[in-house]
Length: 215
Image (cartoon, rainbow, N blue to C red; front, side, top):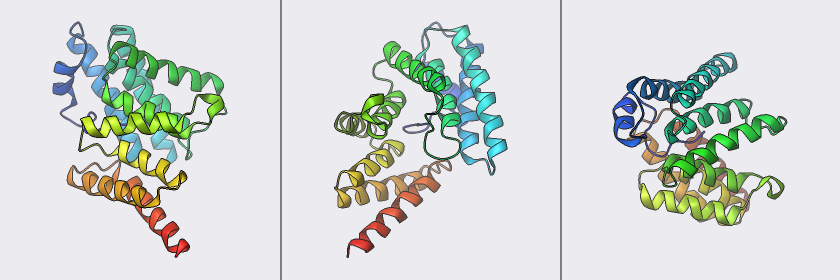
């Protein structure tokens, strides 16, 4: 599901060396990097079967990483990433699997329990808060607050801007949504985030279409 800046590309193994639990062993870091890479590759894969295979591979690597170092927030987030993408493989997140949803949230919550300032996990939490119905813990106002915090901490954040733009549009702040989505697209292109450029482009187009209907 969600990445703030760039935790998934080739340099992730180096980043993990400084960002993960101090007790994480090199093998664990490699598992985390592999799981995050699979999550990224699945987002840009051309067809459903390839996406599913990549996310399932990422899930397996994430599970191994958690088993190797249960105290690693990054391991739990890597597992969450693939579980979340599997749940929304056919579009917006499907909540038909209660067990799958609870497991996904367990991994996200554990990542934040271990590292409350884990910005990728915070971005994911904010996104879920603005998208989920209240009966499942959704809280748009709180979610927007979390997403704004992420953007403040990481000015180049793309996914947080996309999620916040969608929420603003739903809540009647159309111009603010257009601004955020446009910024997200510009940043995604500048950072060559091939897994977020298509989504940012769609959101910008949808927002302009909504604006044109209102004129």
